[in-house]
Image (cartoon, rainbow, N blue to C red):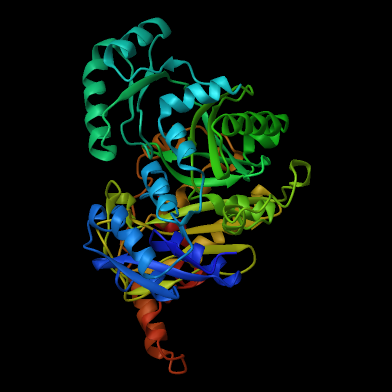
Length: 497
C-alpha cells in the first residue's frame, strides 16, 4: 500500500481523504494557495505544499505546480478529490507519466466520458438507454433535431458539468440566442464552446448510480442516490435510497445494470457515478458519467457501510473489489445537505468573510464533513461550499426528522449560510412525501415569503449573555457559537414565513 499520498484539492473533501489516509497509516500531503494558508485541511495534513496565488489557474488547476509538489514531497500517489482537476484526462495522464499513481479511473476513460456527446454514444453502444438528442455540437444540428423532436429542448455543453452551459429552449425563435449564450458560458468555464441538444424530459427525477470497478474486470453498483432537489442544475440535497426506487424496487437493478454496462463500455475502473433522468413510470435515460468521487458520496457510505475513499485507494494499488454484487446490502436512509456561504434571502449572494462563531451538530446518526473553524476567513475565490451535513436513520421519515434536529443545532456566525433554505425544504409536504423532480426547488423558491427572515436581535442577546455568564467554560469557548435553545427562542418556526 502507498506510504504517502498528495491530495490535489482543498476544503472538506481534502479533510475527508486525510481522515481515511490516517486510518490506513498513510501520510497525507495537502496543497494550498495563498488564501488557504490557514485552511483546516492544511492544518490537519501531515505535510503541506504551497502552490501559488489564489486564482485557481495559478494553484489548484496548475498541473505542473501540483506535480512539482508531489516530487518534492516524494509521494506515491495523487488523489484529485472532486472538482478542479478531478475529471481532467490530461492531469490523470500527467500523474501517470510522472510516476505517480492517479487515484481514479484511467485517463482514457476520463477522456471518453468527459465529452457528453461521446459518453452518450458509449452508453448507447453499451446498451444503456439515452435521452434523444443531437450529438453534433453545432447550431444547425440542434435546430434540425428540435424541429423534428419538438420543443422544449435542453442545450448542454459538450465538455460541461455543474449546470454550466445549460439552457432550456421553449420556442424555435429563441434557439439561436440561447445557443450562443450557452456556448459562450461553456467556453469561459471549460475552454470548449461546443453545445449539443437533448429533448427535455419534463418533471424528471435526477437519479444517479454509484459504480465501482477494479483492474481485474470486476464491477458492481452500490445503489442509487436521489439528486432531484436542485437549484439552477446544481444539487442542493441528496439522499439514498431514492423515494421513487423505494416504490419501484426493480428500478434499482435495471438502472444499476445499465450503469455497469456504460462503465464497462468505457474501460472504466475505480469510483464513478452514472447519472440518469427517470420518470414516475419507470422509464430512465442515461444523462452523463462523473469520472470521480462525488460530493454526495457520504449518503452511499452510510447506507452501505463502506468507506469509498478506502476502496479507491485499495483499487488504485491494484487490489480487487472485496465483495460481489449480491453481497452489497443497503440499509436505512441517508440525507445530505450542502452548506454554502451564501444568502438565500438575497438571491443566493455569496457571503465570504470571517467566521466569528461556530456551533456544529452532533448526536446519533449525524455526520458533518466540514472544512471550517471559528476565526477562519471564507475566501471569495472558490466555490462557497463550507460543509456537508449528513444524517442516517432507519427510515426516510426518521432521517428527515433527524436532519431537522441537526440543522437546529447548526450555527455559523459572521457570515450568511443557506441553512434556512433547508428548513423550508424539509417542512414542505411534497419533499416529505418524496414527490420530487428537477424543477421542484426552483418552483418552491417562487413561493412568496418563503425565505423572509425577520430580524431577531433577542437571539443574539441570548447568545452574548450565555457566553458572558459562563464563567466555568473551557479555554477558547468564547470563540465558539452558542445557539439559543428552542424554548428560549420560540423555535425556528418564526424564522421562515
